[in-house]
Length: 125
Image (cartoon, rainbow, N blue to C red):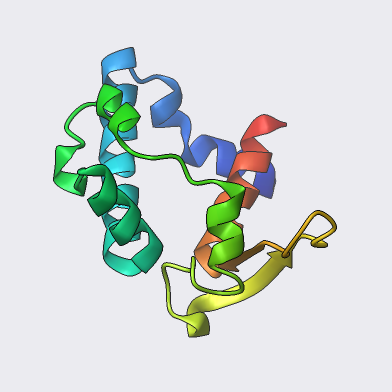
């Protein structure tokens, strides 16, 4: 089979999952992401603490509404690399805005991020 078909088949179990199974997986991955951001990005630690929320408060998907949004201003204040939740040695690609309306915003990607993006694109075909 071709690479794209192989990638789609790799994800087939989730395509047959029930709504409850999908929501359980979404919650598990969201909990990991919120905890990782809190533990590795000082801006999130400060922002969550100021809002009186902690990663352990995320017990259900609906609990996400307790957490503050990340704004473009948050990204600008963290320029250039203070929003990265991984060591710089793990960043393999950087994208930046032009900064036309203010300070540029920067996003770093790891090898795994790029692989995940490729999987998402393959699944959308």
